[in-house]
Length: 406
Image (cartoon, rainbow, N blue to C red; front, top):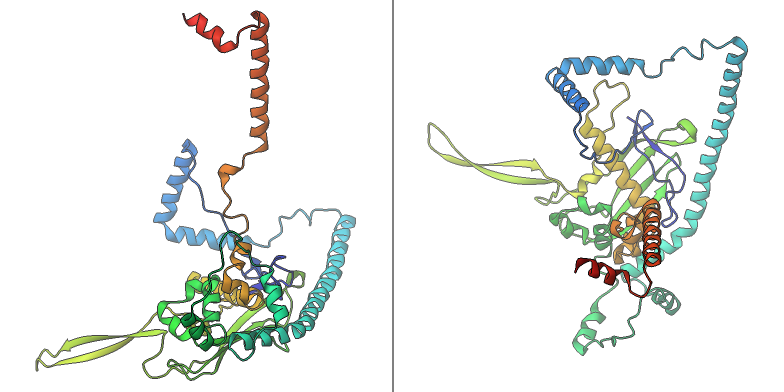
C-alpha cells in the first residue's frame, strides 16, 4: 500500500509545502468518481441488471474474473512486438529519453523540497510570535493591529458599541486568545474527527507546529498546557516517505508513527467503560463487570493504522480508507491549518475551500440556450413586423387580436 505525494502547489490561496497529495494503491492514483445519476431505463439496462444478479449470486465467479483481469494488467497487446525492428528501436530510444526526463523530474522535486525548507526557516519566527500572542506571552504591535484591521469590513451605518465597565474589567483578565486552536480545528477538515468529549482536552492545546525530517517526511507537533486528561506536554506524529521517488519524481508516502499518550487514570478519551451486572447461577450472588470499549476520538489520530504491503493479495478496504483519511488529515494540518491558523479561527479560510461548489445553478445558463433565446426573440420581432405591414399600422397587434375575437 503506497500513497503518492507530489511537491507541486495545491492551489494559490493557501501555501503548500508538500502539495495536494493523491493517495493511491500500488502508486496508482485513486479515482474519485462522481455520484451516479439515475438514467432512463432501456432494454440493455435489463440485460445489465440480469448479468449483475448472476455475478451477485456467484461470488466465486466474480473472484475468478478479478484474478484473471488482474493477471492481464501490464501485459502487452503484442502491437509493439509486431513492429518492424527499426521502429522498435525508436520506441526503445524514446524510453531512454523518458528515463532522462524522470531523472530531471526527481531532481526538480528534490530542489523544490530544499526551497520549501529554506522558506520554512523564515516562517518559523512568525509562527513563534503567533504562539506568544495566542498564549498571552506578548501583544501585537500597533502596526500589526492596523494592518489586520484594514482587511476587516466596517459597517458605517451602525455605531460601534462601547463596552461596559464590567465588560472592560473582565476583558482585562483575559490573556491571549482562549481556545484558539480548538476553534480553528473545528472550522477545518478536522472538525469531523473531534467529539464533544475531545473538546475539553483540546481547550488546553497551546500550539501546533511542524518540522521537516532529515529524510523525506515531516513531523506534526501538538503542544498542550497542563490538563486533567494526560501528562504529555507535546504529542507528535511523524509522516515518512519512501527513500526512492516514484514515477515522475513524486515522493511516495510510506507510513506514519504517533507518540504514545500517557492518559491519566480513567481519562482515556479513546475508550469508554461500560459496567454490566452479572449473577452467579449457583450462589445467586451478583457482581459488577467493567468492559473497556474503543470509542471514536480525535486522539486516534496519533495511533494510525498500519499500511498494507503490496504483496497482500486481499486489500482491506476499511484500512485503505483509514490510511487515505489519515494521510489527508496530516497534509491538511501541514499545508492549511498551520500556515493560516488565524483564517481558520475566524472562518475566513472556508470561502477559499468552498470555491465554486456553492454557486446557484439558477443564476447561470448555457450559452447555447441563450443564443436560442435570442433567435426566438428575433423571430417574434420579424413576425410582429410582418403583421404590422399587413395592416395599416395604426393599431397594435393586441388590439387587432381583440377585433378578431369580437
